[in-house]
Length: 67
Image (cartoon, rainbow, N blue to C red):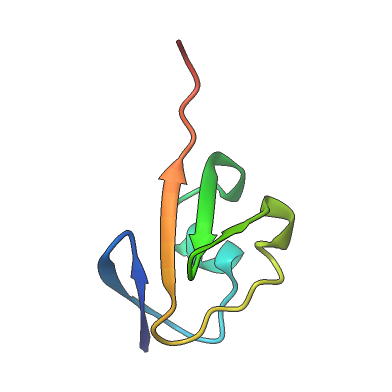
């Protein structure tokens, strides 16, 4: 297991992994979040192709509907 940092917390992850597989492993629906990978905003269409490396940093924000 390697470690990445998600929202400031170290998370063990089996690499290789994509952002999409990481989100699913964290019980997050890829279409319900906004992700920043190492300081760069990532389009949801890139989640299946963006590979994580040890020490990468993710900021994940859940999208909430309502008013």
